Image (cartoon, rainbow, N blue to C red):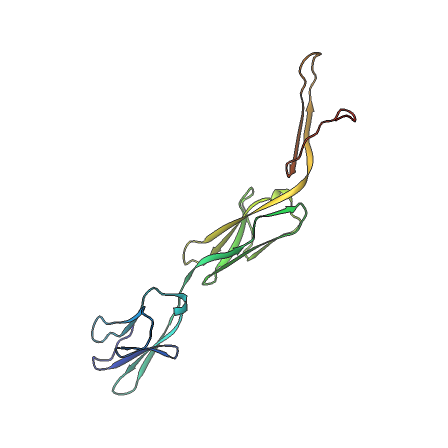
Length: 205
């Protein structure tokens, strides 16, 4: 907002060194800018649909009978956080080193944080890059990147990490059976990708 000394004074608005208005004459070709005059003394600059390019210093210059007076104000345009790049879903072998990337824009510059949302829900230190050295099967799952700058709600995106590991037999059980009865031998194993089970008796499949 800017106010003239009296109704006879002339005002001008500048953005950096470019004249926007001189008195009631509009020098800018931008249709979004206008002069707001609630009364004869008010000479305020109004900008509709503010954009990030509108950020910067604005000067109101008032020509009086004595010496010109100037007032400068800095318009700061805040922008909600937006993640524009995140790592794609990946498949790695157990023991590999993994780096996940999450890049975001916003004003003020957003802070970025990571957390392992499944299965551990473990939070990590903030940063654009999440390094996991010697990844284990327990570290597989979804990782969530959150970009936050207090302008609006955080922007959140996820990446899935699949960890391949060699199959292991977790349990092998058998029970006695009467002659002529039905016998059951159970074998349970784990692996990624899912293992294929084969049964052998001696050397025979």
